[in-house]
Amino acid sequence: MRLTQQQIDAIKQTAADVMGGPVQVLLFGSRTDESRRGGDIDLYIAQPALPQALQPEVKLRLLVKLKQKIGDQRIDVVFAPAQGQTAWPIQTIAQQTGIPL
Image (cartoon, rainbow, N blue to C red; front, side, top):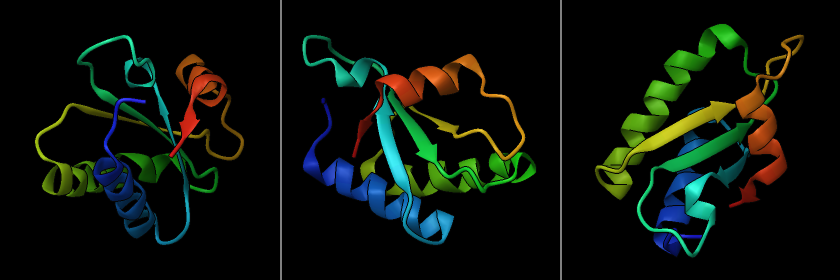
């Protein structure tokens, strides 16, 4: 995993603050591969109770706060499917390959 402990702590704390409580965050994508360089930080937020209509607002708040804490990094956020929502391929990939922070 190519994140510092400071970045991991900041991501976990920020996600909990924005989501209003404990939340499971997974890292997926290129940052999980030690042999690669660069790449954005792909995060999967396992919060199934978050309605799809609220996801854009929550994502924006999360990204703003994360950039304040860890600097100007390219960060992508994917949420777990909302109740009743069919999982998108990216959500399935993130669930299957993600590493818990």
